[in-house]
Length: 152
Image (cartoon, rainbow, N blue to C red; front, top):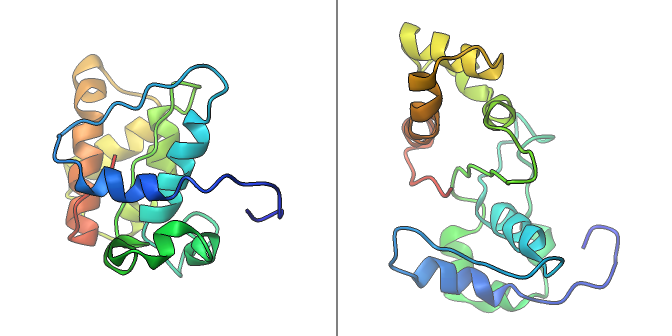
């Protein structure tokens, strides 16, 4: 979209994801069939813009101009309004996602223990117990920071 390349409008899928009542949504696709593109579209749609961190959390509203989803009621209710945890099996490590949300460390809403755990996950210095709970912790921290449901 940013480079004016061909983009098949799959944005109506966003409304389907919002309306789906399942706790987990599995979107299997064959190899080279747009899984990463779809996941990136969902992240860009939902992720909350933080003006103080524009390089990490840009205002993505313009990416959806002229697309099907822009005309839907869910657009105003959900576009750019949620924290997002974006993980991929292509090697997007949990520590990288923690680093992307490092504004939580500066926001002063973590207690001392959570701050230490957060820092250790970024540095990849954690035991099995911390590793197993790290996704739940990040979800909780994002919810506490934004006071919004976290899309992951």
